[in-house]
Image 1 (tube, rainbow, N blue to C red):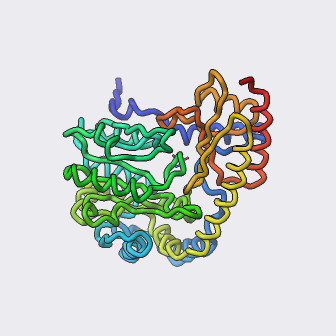
Image 2: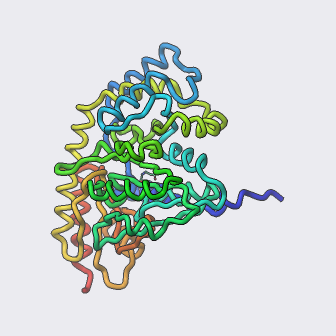
Length: 390
Ligand code: GLU
């Protein structure tokens, strides 16, 4: 009889992917269902990026590339990280990966041994614990509290660190809370890293170009004192609406990159060359990115403003990304119960807070959807919340 790897068999399904699939399935039989489950821009990829892809394919650019990524793309990525994020990475420390998710897996898998511990801040994107478990390491969630608006402090981090801690994963702007990293929090993270020289920091910055008025992004690799232990992960999915293209990257020191490349060359070989060529153009799309950002900001105001006007519904204005982390007051129901109620009664699909490890009676809704859908969703949620007895 065949047996399987225990670490892999123990993995939970990705809840965000499961809810995205469920919403699509429901929509197939009932088009009135509004899908706010998946974190996916509703924009098309900018035309000039698509044009470049076709140009490359038509000119026969369909072969393997240098494994870690095209030199011109890695150079542009290092320049982008220097110019926009204040990080000093060499192109030789960059690996172009099939999506940001694989970059995180590659980093974790390369840095841990069985039984090592990986800390991450909770609420957390659904895949961090599974990526850690798939690497035979132990996920250690650092619970942040809603009452303190999920502020990260040195004191809280210190409660969870042990001599087995190898990595801390952070994600700002945050999925699912929409929080950005404040200077005070970034300083606390620097302090933590200085106190623990054997720990690496994975900074998942996939939403870094989607930041709203009054806030800014802080890249931890811009702190020179710890930069050599910060692995910055980013990609093209969210900022330039390229989710289906599957292209992301990580940046680190050439030494750490070489360790990761040992695994990369035996698993991925390289990302499609024509996709990489198109990604070079994607790094030159400031105007398109800004137009999308403005649109998300407008939709945030519309959606969150509308929800906050409903009795029993509360949501902080997200500072970045395109998720609303919405708290519902429905007596007797936890986040799964609330999500189910909203799904069945209002036909609006979100993802329950517990999928991110912290219930808080919250549901995550993506507002990367049409204004019409968002208005409709607010109206329907208002109507079903009016029926709740409190
Ligand atoms: N990151 C997105 C989300 O949180 C897309 C799905 C996924 O890869 O998890 O919804």
